[in-house]
Amino acid sequence: MKMRFLTLVAAAGVTLAVAIIGACSGGGGSSTDSSAASGSSAPAAASSPSSASAPAAASSPPGASAPAVASSMDVATWHNDIARTGQQLAETVLTPANVASSTFGKLAMFSVDGAVDAQPLFLKAVPIAGGTHNVVYVATENASVYAFDADTGTVLWKVSTLGNGETPSDDHKCTQITPTIGVTATPVIDRSRGPNGAMYVVGMSKDASGGYHQRMHALDLTTGAELFNGPTEIRATYPGNGAGSQNGTLTFDPGQYAERAALLLLNGVVYTAWTSHCDFMPYTGWVMGYDANTLQQASVLNVTPNGQMGSIWMSGAGLASDGAAIFFLDANGTFDPTQNAQEMPINGNFGNGFLRLDTSPLRVQDYFEPSNTVQESNQDEDLGSGGAMVLPDFTDASGAVRQLAIGAGKNATIYVVNRSSMGKFDSNADHIYQELVGQIRGAMFGAPAYFNNTVYFGAVGDSIRAFSVTNAVLSGASTSQTSNTFGFPGATPSISANGTSNGILWAAQNGTTGALRAYDAANLARQLYSSNDAGARDQFGQGNKFITPMIANGKVYVGTKNGVAVFGLLPK
Image 1: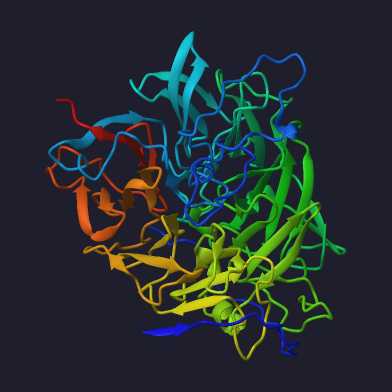
Image 2 (image 1 turned 135 degrees about the vertical axis):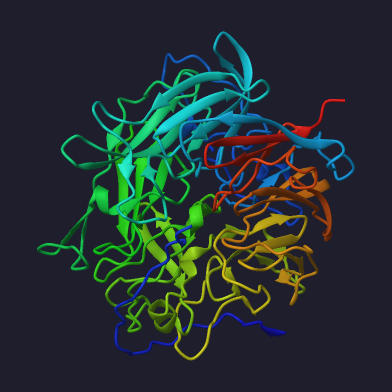
């Protein structure tokens, strides 16, 4: 076991040659506005982004009818909340006692017209189609968005994000998102906007002349109709001399990028983050914000403006937030080891970093770079394959409150950072809050989950491992682990529980025959269920990478290559 616990000290300025990078993270070929999780006991506000009251900026336009009231059961954003904890804490039906192959299994398959790479979303009691329905929203790589009755599977509406005469984008001869690219990123929902609530979706398309488009849509939750004079064509420029620039300006090329990372809705702005198609140059690291009421661009940032690469994709995880700042793991790209007086990269390049962004306007406020960051980027062993998570506040042994974020990438190292003093860069040592080396046994192509003072990681080729949190410190080794391992891309777990009781960890397993697995969250060695337990009864075909199960109202939803598999208690 190798563990390093590092105190917070200022990083020293270091002068080294700037690295220009080889290959990037790619993934292989095969809310609303709300506070983040807070309090070490993970209160109900952390269970769903819509469980917190919406701020004034989120109110409906004058004269609009009142939208449906949010429910703590809602899953309105990727991994349940803006902290990205993956907790569904309002699950009263499913328990470790009744999730077993004799009582639990596949109930239905909601068929759609393309691969479901985005996590399905769920809203309780939506006034829609002349009645009130629990609704599952599903987006596909064929550029379609569906609203399904969550209880019957009836299609309540279906719309396309394509313009007239357009098709979904081709895959750009890159097998990471294939064969077409429509809606890849998990949308985000705000029940308080517009007359009936809005779902924000980014869609990619190709027109008859061969031109590519990326557009921000706001869809009415009850009809699928476009809101706020949308959609908005996504365009951006940023000062810099990096890859693809002309005369000191970078211009966003919609055909050169994909929106893989899940959308974040924070304080009235929808944030998007952009990755490349494979390693096809030129590309740099774009983050953009769009006003949730107008769909007009609110802010733009490029995190490698004078370099190259440094995309943001995180295997589909979303930008994370504590309600104020944004946190994410950047993919391999140019980093400037030479720092200015504020210990920031001299040319503003933050490739392969754990970054904190302030939002007014977007800017890198703080960061952490591993001491060997240049070597890691050159070897494509970057942080950006994994997703970041904001942890609840913890109290350490001295009584001090610690505000932390956590993540891991390809180097099998867990990084825990102080959100207000992340550690910056020193080529001699890592100056961060805590670092666990080698306690996950493979690369992370996904994100962790959190529940009841425990953090869960599912690395490639490894078991899912639980790490306890005591006095604001992760355990030096896993406290429990699954008996089985997960091949590429590992697993991004989700949690269902009733408050702090009846915790179940759910994971989707990729492969020729995909699987849904469930474990006792308090003891991962106890597997409760696998969709392979009952032969073909519960199987749903080929697995899909970067899928995290979504749990709501006694059911578990799993995105597949051609639909959403629905699991729940079997009829008696």
